[in-house]
Image (cartoon, rainbow, N blue to C red; front, side, top):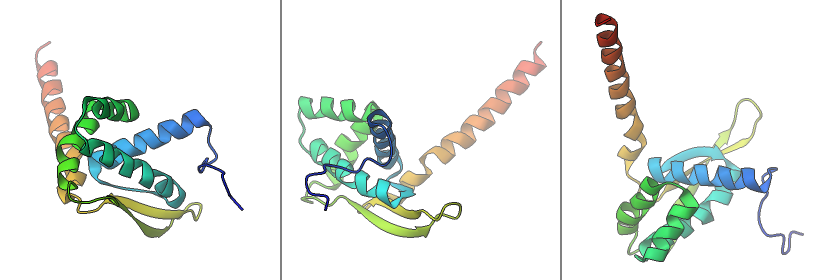
Length: 148
């Protein structure tokens, strides 16, 4: 039995596990839906719910705690401005885990973790920026080559 065993270690050192969870939380906040393995999603769900609950209480200490846990001010501000407003009437259960079959290479169980009532356009955030930046990079490279 696993009584009083604490948490899942995911076969990683504590530093690696903390970095993994922090990066996955940032991705989840940014895109509002990510695909990962089922054990990682199960570890991530309570962490994400706690962050949303912190963001709902508008205090300086909670803002600093969010920034400390995420190490990203953009993610922390999105939690405080967008997600906390979206879930102000919900008392918990801000995320859901949907099983997504098994990975081809190693047959690991996969899952999709997403926010309930998520913004579908959030997944397309970087695609526009990448397209614009590649177009701008090509223009700047061609102008650099033209003016020696």
